[in-house]
Image (tube, rainbow, N blue to C red; front, side):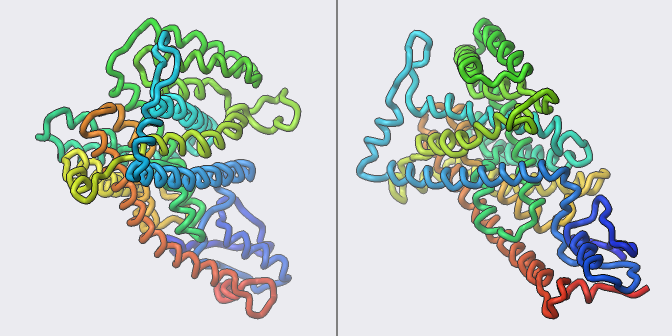
Amino acid sequence: MCCKGSQQALHVGKQGKHRPGLGLGQVRREVWSAAAGPTPKVSAVVIKGSRTSLFSRGSWLETRRIAEVLRKETIGGVLLLAAATVALLWANSPWAPAYEALRDWRIGPAAWHLDLSIGMWAADGLLAIFFFVAGLELKREFVAGDLRDPRRAAVPVAAAVGGVVVPALIYTLVNLDTGDGALRGWAIPTATDIAFALAVLAVVGRHLPAALRTFLLTLAVVDDLLAIAIIAVFYTAELSVLPLLGALVPLAVFGVLVQRRVRSWWLLLPLAAATWVLMHESGVHATVAGVLLAFTVPVVRSEKAGGPEAGRGLAEHFEHRFRPLSAGFAVPVFALLSAGVTLGGLGGLGASLTDPVAVGIMAGLIVGKMIGITTATWLVARFTRATLDEGLGWADVIGLAMLGGVGFTVSLLIGELAFGTGNPREEHVKVAVLTGSLIAALLASVVLRIRNRVYRRVHAAESLDADHDGIPDVYHHRLTPS
């Protein structure tokens, strides 16, 4: 029999033993079959709606880790959305001067060029924690996760690259003749905010395949890597070589300690802070320090480790410790201090949205992300041996590609780097990022909610057991005597 989309063909032996690669529905069927006693000899079973392959996702520990990451990022996305809403309302309220005073309040030692505003501390300092966690996730995926297998990595990697290249091209085409430095914002619509996107997915898709969330997580991990490279290469205005070389010293000591599985915060945190300060002094954006520090952390578990954390690699240990701080505090505080934009009524909103820079950002996020992610995924699936994860359909991919247009956190950061604070286009960039991300989230919600209804009906059909024999009725109807 032929299997397509959520339909799959399965050959079942007499004993109904599990074999690697079978979907969750097939495993259920064989277990139920064995538990129910002798059954007619089966030549083939066709099961609709087998939504994910439990045993092709690796070990149970890896599956549980991914579920924990998704849960924390989803909670972080809710906090991020709440913080952005508060910032927007505050900036357009009678208390707007207090918001601006808080954001512009400068603090820090001037001798080290660290007398930064609170908003800059959030962008340079707090987001370094975000990029540290992203770096840990990146290294883990490339060393021990899906990205170490070229065939499994090909689809999400290609999707992420397409989701960066096409939005950047669209923005460039829109602003080709604009002038006044508008092209510096080409990278703004290339980012995907994983926390915000997962929060939307959690709200609209309780019955969506787990593979869809994992695909989005992997895509966002690669997207973060590309964003880091873009920030480091294209948004470093002046490079001071001496501080940059100096940053390698504490970075190297940090690396030696973590390779020896040292976890003492009083040793590691000062080294991390020194690396951050020297990276900031060098002219490279300080958040890059977070990624470099993360890349030194070992992923493979130590065989000599003892205690309650013995089964966990050091990268996973740090990720477990710092992800709540990143998703629950650092990113929401950055959103609170960066998303506040004075709209100036309908006239001001209209002026912001008609700026070619804003048009390019919104077109990149809403149209470019969908076209880039979907097209790249199709091309890889069509012309290589790589395939979509089991249980995913193309309608799911289109919905996910729309959801990739939720840029937000990193888009706002790149906007500040591209045009700087105080630039007339700063407010237009914020309005465009917020509007584009919101529209992309709404469009994705419509598509994914439709898909959720389909999977909900499948789930209901697979759960119905009218004769109470322990085997859902749908599987009785699938039996075909040989």
